[in-house]
Image (cartoon, rainbow, N blue to C red; front, top):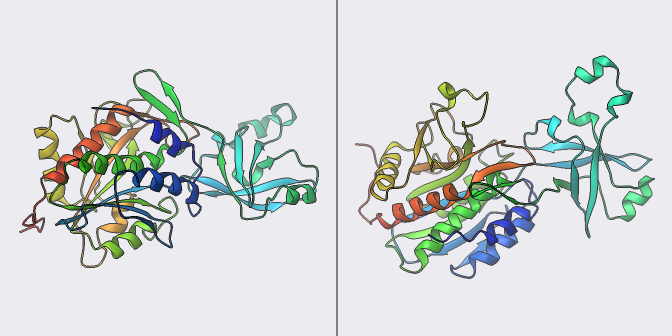
Length: 355
């Protein structure tokens, strides 16, 4: 199985925080246009790539393309920028990071500042940093100079971290949550493109998952598409690192294959078919219990309209919501392979209704 990840690097390196996914979306659609069609984008920022338009049943493959980031809330007279979080950050990982500000006319570099440790009281050194206590320094000496750089209140910011290769066929990058999901759903339809399945397949790079308490772009896209079945791809916690409680999260390791969710938004009949296909294809996998919400796009999809049978497949991810998340490339392609094999088994008569 080919493991060309040059497109993945382009996708991870493109900035796209929630609500501002346009740059990453363009990269995804450009790649999709080389083997699928039609390819489009909606008003919310969801990107679509369709394979076998006349096929049936209709399957939706969703991976959210947004990432967590920051947004400028204030620029003071000295030219320092203050920010709020887009999505959920541990502020400790922000201190001292280089950032890229997505300005009106250009991308502007900056650094996140904090009072030097030498100047802190002993009590202050014991306290955790809060985002509101940090600032971004672009090198400007006044508010007017910041404005001259094309920076405005409301501009989004991402950390300046690009993808790197690690040992063991692993990669590290910001935005792995969940740019890899958008990558995987597109790779799945690429695998299907040479020998079309019976089904119509729409891959969706969904928007605003990290801030979409009511379902984000996934709910809007599922409502529009009215699929017969949906597969959501996201990341989950890899539990092969120190101090992680396996009794709560299960046992999922890098290189251990995709993680299949059971419960809540994850339809049991879809799960059973996915697990059977994984075993037939000799794809390693683990199972994760989701007794309540999944905290993924599946929550926004499965109750859309009259209900959509939805499966959730996750990729084990170390250091989630940090500047350097880590995943196994083997897991990415095994997940795409599982999805492609699942789609090939779908027929017009396939019925996921529990009876």
